[in-house]
Amino acid sequence: MVKGTQGLSFKVPLMAAQLQEEWDIYHATWFTLMGVGGGLFLLARLLDLESRLGVWLGLPVVDLVSFVVIGVGGLVLIWSLGRPLRVLRAVLKPGTNWISRGAIADFIFLVVGGVLILPGLNLDNATPLAWLPWDPSASDAAGKTMEVLALLSSAVVIIYAGLVLADKAAIPFWNSPAVPTQFMISSLAMSVASVMVLEVLNGEPISALQLWLLFVFLALLLVAIAWHVMTKKSAPGRAESLERLYTKFRRQFLGGVVTVGTILPMVLAVVGVALPPVRDVIGVVCLLCTVAGGFGLRLITLRVGFFPPVTGAIRRQKR
Image: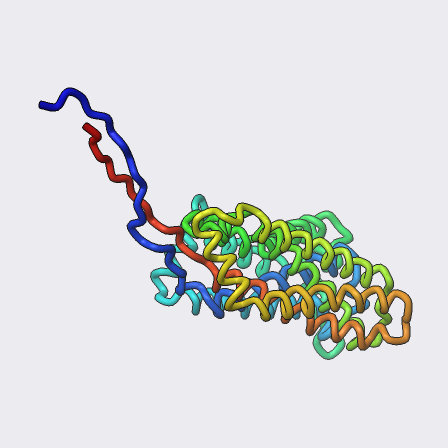
């Protein structure tokens, strides 16, 4: 006869952590292009650099480059999502889906930014769209309103790729505010380097301010990377991600992303401040380093994403 029982619960593993394999190189490419494209427009407008970066057919080259990069990024997004119906489903859920919000921001940015610069179009010394009632340099109320809307949209374009991942609660390594922070700062660093190369191509000198700005962004990126890898290291799912990061991707991460993609251009930025004659070369090298590092950061972040292990409870009766 049983006089009494006491329940004891034991947690047992039901399934090991699973590596995600759906998000890979196309998504990393999309994230990188969006960051560079949005950052170019944002920095050039905020720093008032459009005229220094060249004009083609009366239109600012930096804006045109930004539009092309964002457009290519949008095509990569569509390619990465696959079936057309899947694309529509993603875009039509702005209330719950950061891909949808980002796609809408892309569209607003391309339309509003493109329309903003149209009055400056020059074809054979003729300006057929000069009658449009706003100034493409945003010196009047209508132009300024359009510019602000385009700037806000470009800011969303820069950050939403990171928010797409941070919103994926099922993968602990991605579900962190450090991810969008890293992606945003990396995008700004790549954009500063891109601006410097456009100056070189247009025969304009790179300023010390831009080099210091690059240095600050890269220093902040190092802090964000350290914050990400040092947080909740033993949490289920994150532990597996960190193990893969430091084993399979150790060389690419520490040697590529951290050293070549971040520390090296930081050092070069300081050298450029001290030695103006070498700034053109430094600008080009910094662009190569930051873009390679930024792309590597995004790709490795994707490739170390694990779904956490699944555990269950077994209840035993103790007599």
